[in-house]
Length: 494
Image (cartoon, rainbow, N blue to C red; front, top):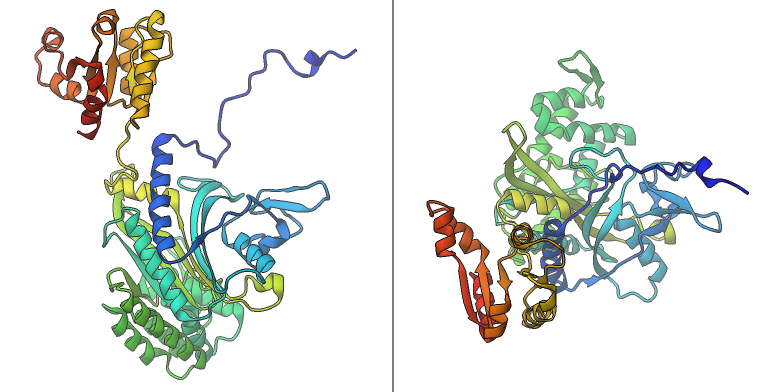
């Protein structure tokens, strides 16, 4: 006979805490995310995209480059072995599952295949402020079209989707570039190795932080920072450095002018000319779709993602600002991005399958909208609370709450054990617009007493003392019971 108490102390109590990098969400956050997804989904469906939901787990080998090392399947992802010893991992993003789905069902899918998806993704990375291990993404992709117009539709859809979600025009912009432009420029400049091209991309990505002269050093031999640390440069020579800097600064006031500037810089490269033609076709399609320069423009300095994408690349940048804990103004920066990736599906099929898409973080967008004073889903509003005075009258209370619910009004009977004052405090904490009270007198008379909590709070600010408040009972009315629904609806609708 064994004594389990030897191994498990009877007084053991686990600490109540969420794992690092995982956040609990209450009604306000969930309502905001739902409102964003409903608005964006409506836009995507107007563009002819169909919804797709894939499982949370994929086989680890299907994640491809998203898995840093196949010998360490938990590196970067959360993975486990199933009963036949195959490694499965929680999806890192929504793109890898799409690639697997498209390859698996390619023969029966309409081509091009246009789909959108949203849901949680998981990353086994070090968490930090604003950096979670689980968060909601929303993606839209076209698989099977190599036409630049497919990129343009994704960009236009992203612009309209973000505005439909609540971002006012001018609060965000889609920045567009093309990998082939810089590739062609670097090839012409003599940068042949993949490592050297990657060093150039990393240098250009620091343009906002280091400025032109700082990037010039990183494109050349290297840069010594203020701490004395030396960062080795890309090793480009003088003329090649000038060409790269001329390219990344070719952005002008509008898409057409920027294209003219780029044409002057990249001259002579076949790959660069191909990228320029693709951007020109994207610009033409965006113009036809009614997307203006202040909504989407060409920015040659956008290089983040060029290592991954095979053609067009775009980034959604929030222009909104907020203040940090110290009162300093800070920008939200990038909220999403996308581009053309023509080799992801090929991992499964061996055949190049053109694809393009856009992804944004739903939780991050909700935070940005809130900072801009545009609460997603509207202000919080709790249910109408029916005060429970007496257990003997519970049938009446449930009859009233059923009457309200039947009219489409959220309502609940207080089911705790507290008295009147704590019940009013409960209603206030729930964000209730009103409480309904039925004592014995009201039940006998066929009436109900309704208290408008918002009106009561506002009126109380102008009353001199508690006695005056009790005498006036601001926001409170007693009405026939058959007028209950109309009276409550009037309070809710303001």
